[in-house]
Image 1 (cartoon, rainbow, N blue to C red):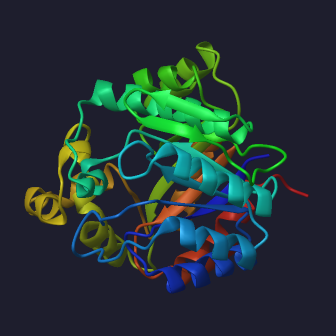
Image 2 (image 1 turned 180 degrees about the vertical axis):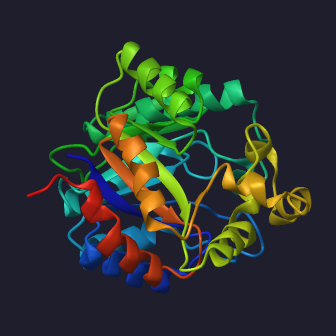
Length: 321
């Protein structure tokens, strides 16, 4: 049965309020949660960017839900440090944590002062990081000289069962590539034919494990309010790769999104005051076979969304009885 998760957006909400939101989401009937891992928000209007790994320890302790995080090892994070973080959370909360790994965005990674590599180099670097992380979680001593360097690293605190390493993808080609190494696949809402093609590419290439979908939604009691929330908070997030990968600062994102039309936002966010319409959108994703669907209300106030979806949306998506 598909589980429905709450997506915690560190770029938009301060960590204390986000912790209160995820606790409330569990009480309202959400099954799981996941969060972003950013150094910088996508827009000055979003205005936050708490440290995901500190927050995850609190969130896992404060709830009983499984959690995931979307992380980009290789530049801002050394893979041995990410392996240690994954291993510690996995040891503390067995079976409740997974990490999705991707190639990242310049907006978070440029802070190191190192050059931002080409996409093919970033993919090769991620593949090295995955091998390093897996070996460390398996208890091996790791030395590696490549796009990342590791010298005699060993994890002394490890879980009995390593958490899943999920591949993050938005294209069919990347989904196919993730099948080589990932324990599952995660992507974001897109037209159903594109999502189906991604799933087929991943499975046909031998991809194993669960399928995760993050769905951006904007809901409010009035349609104009739902549209205003989406436009204010998410118009900087409408740009396809490579633009979203390569812009470096919130000023860049705010400048290029200054004249984005509202209809463009509605292409990447499911915007409606009608809860029944949200049910219909989610039913389409369910039919594709996703194992977990994480709902991200793109507004900064979460309680109304949590209460409405917990009471009126999630029950309609679950099997009767």
